[in-house]
Amino acid sequence: MCVVRHGETDWNRLGILQGWFDVPINEKGRRQAHQIAADFAGEGFSSVWSSTLARARETAEIIASALGLPAPCSHEGLKERHFGAIQGIPKGELAELNPALLEQILRRNPAASFVGGESMDEFADRVLLALDDIGTQHHGERVLVISHGWCLDVVTRHVNGLPRDAILPHKPMNGDSVWLDVARHILAAA
Image (cartoon, rainbow, N blue to C red):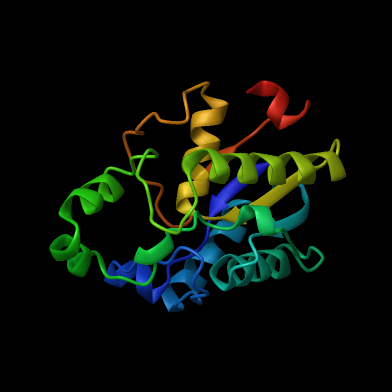
């Protein structure tokens, strides 16, 4: 299984926190999706899955079409972390409203707390259960999963045996990927 961050959106470019807002990819994001398809053309994927959010779905649709695969399936569990009350707020505005929280977001601190949003444990459990579900449905197959940046952080910590509260050294960029070996249940590897 390969988990990939969706193509760029205008909100990514403008530094607006998307969370569960349904923002489409932009032209650069579409080019990134075509490049991802070209990069993975020989990988033998049997199917493509995505988050239910538009930016991931459109990225997945472009890739599936370019690879000649069936239309992507969607899974609610692959959605980005819910950032609660700060979703839709530009980072520049958040710098004035709550600079300490912005600093946590910029560091991608998994312990960051979002009023009205998901805790890290709720979020990580949801993402890992979704990947486990998809892996179970596609035993022995190669599957491409299009999701979100904070989701890639969860997967990266998990596959490297890091605690959920570990701060990673870099932010996943649009189109970055993490490969998983799901010969056994993902949650069993925790």
